[in-house]
Amino acid sequence: QVQLVESGGGLVQAGGSLRLSCAASGSILSILTMGWYRQAPGKQRELVAEITPTRNTNLADSVKGRFTISRDVAKKTVYLQMNSLKPEDTAVYSCNQEVITGVGRRVTAWGQGTQVTVSS
Image (tube, rainbow, N blue to C red; front, side, top):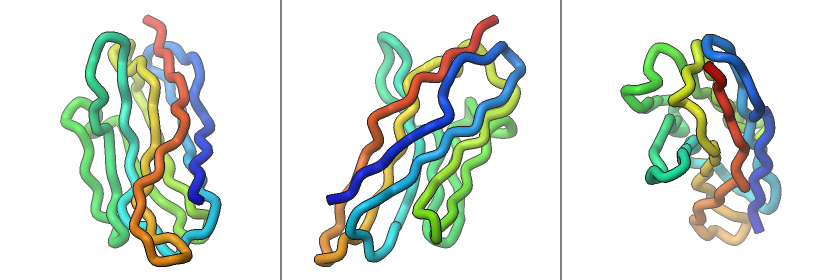
């Protein structure tokens, strides 16, 4: 079974920065695409950023130039560096990793979510 544990959320003033981390554990042969999603109250979950095994990245237009996604394969961890935060970035952020398990299954694992609150 694959588990994801997130950390790094919290309360920050507008213009500030936070760094989210998401570490995977369990029987994992390889990790494919890793990503971050967010869901604000009353809104649908949206993709914030994703990174492929070759480190190609895709970021939502609303965060381009402010957020950076990166990965550390050895640590099975994906990071989201968030700079110049805005109140509209307030949401629950969840990570997502597509992995090949030890028995060769391709599964998508989700973290439990971490709250990011940006005050004006």
